[in-house]
Structures are given as C-alpha cells and as structure tokens.
Image (cartoon, rainbow, N blue to C red; front, top):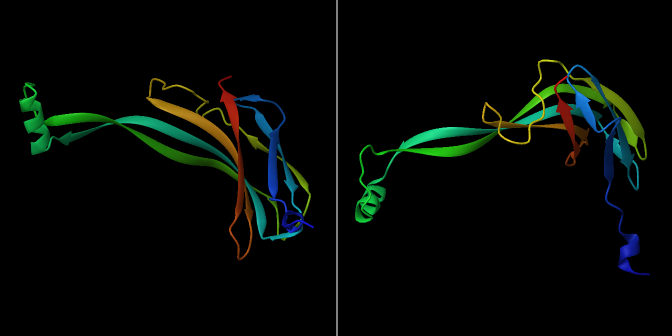
Length: 162
C-alpha cells in the first residue's frame, strides 16, 4: 500500500446561496455543507455577514532632502516640499453574526441560515465609486475548534441596490 492511502482528506466547508445576486431589503439564504473524513469536536459554528471597504485615501508628507536634491538635479523646480500620495486602506465590517450550531461532534452535516440585508447597507461596487471605495460582501463561516486552529470558509456575494 502506498503512504497516500493512509493520509486523511482535507476537511471541506462548502457555502452556497439561494441565488447569485441579492438586493438591499432582501433575505440572503445560505447553506453550509461540512465534508470531513472523521468527526470533529467543535465548540460552535458561526456565520458572519461581512463587507470589506477598499478605500483610496490621499496622504501628505514632506519630501526628504535626498528627494529634493534628485528633483533639482533633474531640473524640476521644487516649491512646496509637500508630496501627496494615494494609499489603499482596507477595512472589514461585520454587520451580522449568527451561531448556526452549538457544541458537538460534526462529520457530514448541512446547515441552513439567512441574513436580512438592511436598506442602509452599502451595495457591492467593483470600481471606485464617488466615495473612492470598493465594497465587497462575503458570507464567512467559522468552526470554533477547541485546542486547535479554527476552520474558516468564505463565499463572495453580490448585493445590489433595490
């Protein structure tokens, strides 16, 4: 027998949704399927509705003496020593959290859940909007495993305005 026959499969957490696109004011229905090769002892299984905000911001700084010398050597006039630079900042916002299962041993189970998408939430954007930000939504699943690293899975979801 080869040594690969004794290795266990990697545990898999599958997330699916009831439809590909959701709108503000709707319920987002999801299903979580656990596919493990053995029972895993879990303190709890949690679902999060999360969005990330990737934002373009301008930061200002003073040029160093070396930068001023380089500009002068290149023939570029140096007036104000202030430099504006675009930076990208990513913030994560957890808008809802559910405990979908309590403590126990899990092997191949399926769980159903839903999140209500409030009207005041920002909708998905794929390019920088008027606020210089990109919004991406996710369903994130976390298995809280005692005395071991937690297991995580996530699925991107699209949320559009009404």
